[in-house]
Length: 94
Image (cartoon, rainbow, N blue to C red; front, top):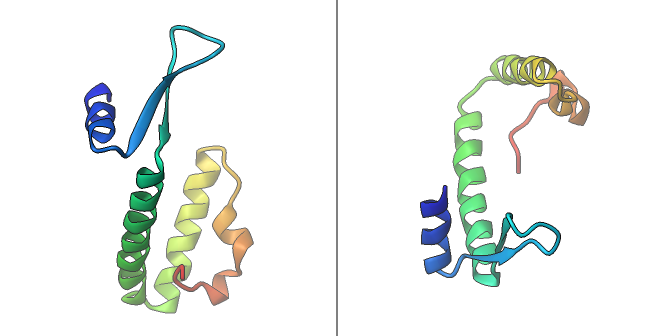
């Protein structure tokens, strides 16, 4: 992880700083350039993800959402996908 953060820091995408409450801890935050790059990467990810979802039928999307809800339940998380929309009207993220 340290190498990854160092590489991102060298590219000006993140900045490391000391934790003011714990000298053993180093924090990492995105720089302005890092936030811009994240928005670009995220937009590409959403576009690719939606292209994959577009290939699924409505029934396949409902099964996928149900499977995600089951995994979230197993992980102790709240079923966000099921709350956000009914299984009947599941659509890709836009």
